[in-house]
Image 1 (cartoon, rainbow, N blue to C red):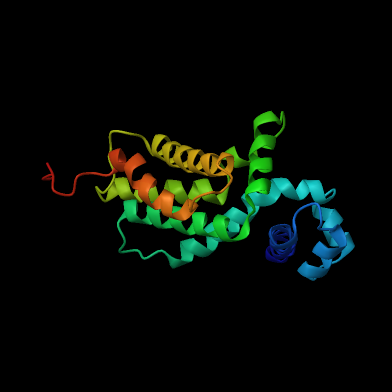
Image 2 (tube, helix red, strand yellow; image 1 turned 180 degrees about the vertical axis):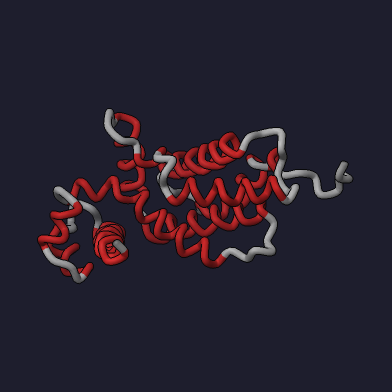
Amino acid sequence: MRKTRNTKGRIVAAAWRLFYEQGYDNTTVDEIILESGTSKGSFYHYFKGKDALLSSLSYLFDEKYEALAAELDEGMDSFDKLIFLNQELFAMIENSVSVDLLARLYSSQLITRGEKHLLDRSRLYYRLLRQIVQDGQQKGQLTDEMSVSEMVKMYALCERALIYDWCISGGEYSLRAYGGQMMPRFLGSIRKNSEQPSA
């Protein structure tokens, strides 16, 4: 199972690296295979062709979240954990995903009648967010006036809104810096006032 995920992950990572460096149209399947150190058989086992890789960005994001989960300090406030994850993801997007491809991915999600992988609640992204929010509620760091699901949905919605705006603005500003300003404002209502005496 781990080997399977590693093979697919290597293909996805190599593809998006090449897409970023030389553009989607200028990248061939053979170059992706060579860059990933895999085989043609492995490639076509996971993907029907290059176009199928466009929907694999959520997989790449989840790989990033898996690495970030290991870096989270257990002593960190839950709200700060959420902001940390957002900042790290936005830095990764800014430094390794072209605006054009991200825009293409988002537009495909708007018109697809099939699976909308960005909304797949079984993704590691959503599982990790649920875990952090649940923990934050239990520790009294996050509001209990909203459910865990509502807060996770709010977080994901805010992230997608910022990414969408960055795409339609053609990446003319720093996604990470703007996210650093806006996410705490958008999510401020879920944080319990630390100065409020506990009942």
